[in-house]
Amino acid sequence: MRYSALALLAEAFRGNAAREPVWREPEPKPAYDVVIVGGGGGGLATAYYLAKVHGLANVAVLEKGWLGSGNIGRNTTIIRSNYLLPGNIPFYEWSMKLWEGLEQDFNYNAMVSQRGVLNLYHSDAQRDAYARRGNAMRLHGVDAELLDRDGVRALAPFLDFENGRFPIRGGLLQRRGGTARHDAVAWGFARGADRRGVDLIQNCEVTGIRIEAGRVKGVETSRGFIGAGKVGLAVAGSTTKLADMAGLRLPIESHVLQAFVSEGLKPAIDCVVTFGSGHFYISQSDKGGLVFGGDLDGYNSYAQRGNLPTIEDVMECGMAIWPGLGRLRVLRHWGGVMDMTMDGSPIIDRTPVEGLYLNAGWCYGGFKATPASGWCFAHLIGRDEPHPAAAALRLDRFATGHVIDERGAGAQPNLQ
Amino acid sequence: MRIRCPHCGERDAQEFGYLGDATKRRPDGPGASAEAMFDYVYLRNNPAGPHREFWHHGAGCRTWLVVTRDTRTHEILAVADARAAAQGDGGDGR
Image (cartoon, rainbow over all chains, first blue to last red):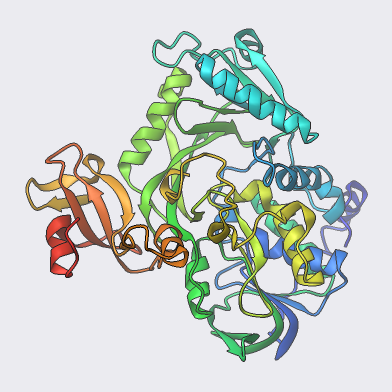
């Protein structure tokens, strides 16, 4: 069924009699042309674009839990393309462009809301750095505006402009940035892939990767062996576990990142705001809860939960720009496992194993990249050549010295 | 999460700074090959399970420690002075 206002109305009169599951639950076939491991945002988007753009429908997505049970359901839903470095900007801007047409494209309401992303600056030096970033963005055709204090005040009058330690001097605004409904993004890609013939196989954990003479032959799973001409890994925090099965060693550490939602409020903040003197970002969901987060906990972790010192740090950062937050109660918080690379940028590339492709290293910025991650990974798998927008996101860039170190932190994953 | 510092007793993890994987050894001097340096700087085993890692008791005795911690549960299995751990491993103690 194609979703539309008319279809909704017609279904209402029919008592939703024609309602059907949004995707099938197929049994795995003995073999596929392409097997994607990981039924999260990246894996589902890859399958969708493989079927839609590259005409490959003999594709399976294997997910050990339920679809969208990993980081696609655990993020803070922000979309933006306000990057600085040449290897990154074209990729994230391509993602932004895909976001802008996504709902029409996959016929699903992903609640994409271009409400603006505002990065606050608190010093002259930081203003200069933001001016440089804004200029880099504009040179790549991305929108960016440098606001002074009055400009920020017009957008968010409740911030603490006179804070003694972190006075707000202005901000860098990307109006096309914003938020999207994270689960609906996974569901929209899943539905679109399923309708084009992709098998979405849940509760199917990959336990081994079969390689013969340097070429991938398929995957061992909790539901038996599944043959595959090509295998794509899109498993975020579990990347190292899967890479170990193929004998690959990667420049990746898994770290835990926490996020928070407050009790529901009337509309209070209509854009995404980030703190410039610490790591903190906040927006308001359409349900009314304030959604916010900050730094990684900072130590290697596969536990999807963090510790109290980081929670305290996030709250302190929030209070530094918006003291009114102190009157709110936190409703819930959670953690997700991030595949942190050594330069803070992702990897979409072939591996030394023929037919095995890697989509990993999303650090804590994977959600905004979901459409382009899928688009470029599908291009790589479908045509066996890198997409121009992701050509710099190579696996061998660490060995050759072509790292894309956006933060300038060096090879310290917990500082990216 | 609390870490039992050999000198200060059990202290909150907030007092400690984290450096990372303690199993890596810097290849020796200018003679080290590019491959060995690449492995040292960039590649990580990143285990889901016990992980040996450097922590610094910066808000305490300022000693570098090697902590063995399960990355799936955050349970701390062992703590040792980094110097003692290095010498115990037959390392050079740097």
